[in-house]
Length: 205
Image 1: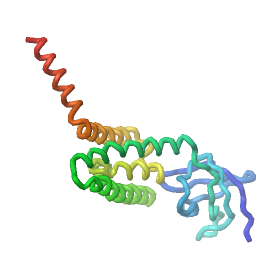
Image 2: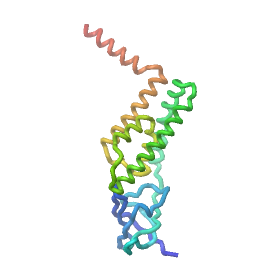
Image 3: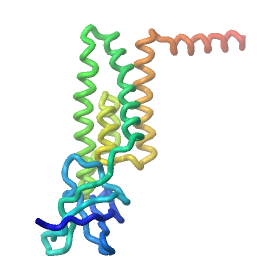
Image 4: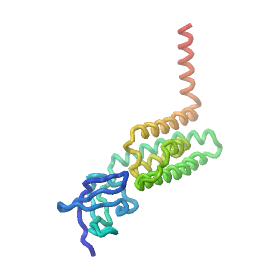
């Protein structure tokens, strides 16, 4: 049985999926393929355990990397808060359609498609291949895949550092909430806006 080492991820290029682990003053190459499924996306500073092995060219490489990071309370709360955002769209769907389950089912389908698009775009970015257009990702989010996009961003650590992209993403989420609230409330915001415009018009006559 090979000896397992305790180390630290001292460098990490998330776009290209590789970095270096340091243990006992020595650095070893680490590739995303050695982290395995079900682990959070690596980031600089993570504590890991690994076996010392070699790549196809005989160079030293970290094998069977396991991360020691545990999910934070803050991250769990953010996911819970995001799930709450699903309530209004589901209620709105129940008010519009006799089959209330059609809206959540549609959102699940679109979320799976959007998740797959994010995963494919991440793979393409690491392989330096032609990328999925950001407009395509946003369209999938707008069509109901925004929950899948939220979790894909965190699972693959993809698009989480692009401020402009995230602004459009949260704009889409907000739009879904506003439209859903209007449907559930029977047009409260619409009536308020129309009333305010009418008062402005009357005061200027």
